[in-house]
Length: 121
Image: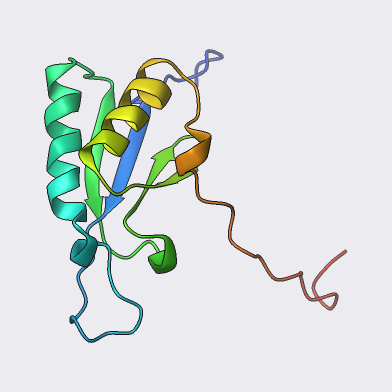
């Protein structure tokens, strides 16, 4: 094994929730809020800008339905809620190209329950 740090295959990997639930489902779904069309816009813009080191993929439910539509950018694990092509363009230009977060579109970390003391050190 090499002592050099192996570079990432993609500099950034963006997962866009395109999960679709029935229209009467109380949780709703990202697809019902336009995530499929907005994902296509993101892919087109990524290709137009020549960002070959950035990968855009569809994802099933990312369990952030109340904030949907959502996307998550790895390796940072930054979550965004978006509603329009303008939001997508801002995320792409500000975060992906310039390396700055778009605070107004970020989704806060979900509540994580405390670890059961029976299993902690």
